Image (cartoon, rainbow, N blue to C red):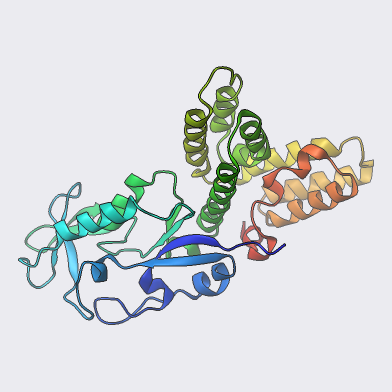
Length: 317
């Protein structure tokens, strides 16, 4: 079965469109060539959308980091703050229902998600903040996976973002089918080990949340559950936490593997923990054993395959 591509919002310049202030672009080939095989992109350029031309005077953030103004770098009287804030709030509150993530242009006074420079009125650096569009996007869509293109070069951040995108896609598919108590419990069961690898505290917390669903508003509970789940997945999985989950997985094979196979599996897991081999190696071995010795619980776990193997994300972890 061919998977329908996942809808992702993106800063338009990253697709190679010449919408930058200088008439250029910031084409990111990893995004278009690799992620583009699985993602469908809906592009946004806040500055162009509010009527600023191409090319145009560049803008920067000035004043308070909590509530900066967006003004021209040459002409401080050129102030587009209100237009940008209005566009950003309206747009971020009306994203397509099927959108499962957003990739933003780093350092941009509109789209930058982290470490965007804010200046004093005299032009000297003041502090750091978020771009106006990115700020509204994240505040109005707290569960939406978002990342900057520059940070996608970090293997751990890249894997974390893409895993959350596929997680959101599965959740949206579930909600389209119609949520009920049984489906919610099943969804949680499928993601238990993945969540344990990201944030064990959330694993325990959400287990308690779903322990008694009698006489509860399932839709309200589902929204609360997913908000907490996505917050838990924002924590990066570490080698220590992954190793704990790998050991947990190996426990389901103890009655099937002989002594030699058990020793090999433990050696592989230990070598991963010691940073000698990437995560894909123990995952591949476990997947092999679970194909040979099927286990109903493990067959449903997203930990072994949270996204297509072709993305090769665990080769660098």
